[in-house]
Image (tube, rainbow, N blue to C red; front, side, top):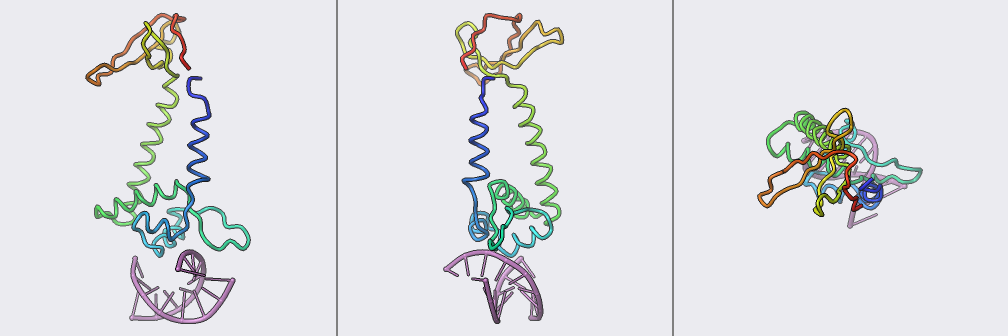
Length: 156
DNA sequence: GTTCTTACA
DNA sequence: TGTAAGTA
């Protein structure tokens, strides 16, 4: 695999462990009051990390921040809370699909004619042709189909 | 000082 | 949703 799991794991750690905020911080960051944050949580719109034992203060992760920030944006645009939540869910679902497709479609980067191109996997059902993509000076995406196996050299 | 829950304007 | 009270 061209992209080892390392990058993904780092991002995951970044989001879940390093970026943790208390309710006051999240409120300041997003412009949403602590009252609202507690209310939204009571409604199941957002969630904080599990509070263990004596831990009475809520702790939010990066995911919660993203969700709150998105809802806040829609609220500012005039949506009701219900509408803002709906829009946010649609937005996040769209991004999830885009992310999943790209994550699975992009196999890596290889050298073709000594130039780096994106390996997009097999082009046909027979798996005799490989699809590659590159981009030219005008940001125009160019596709190339090559016989497989090719002499493309992985530059992982 | 901050956060929590509950209650009321 | 803001604010106040009384805690932890």
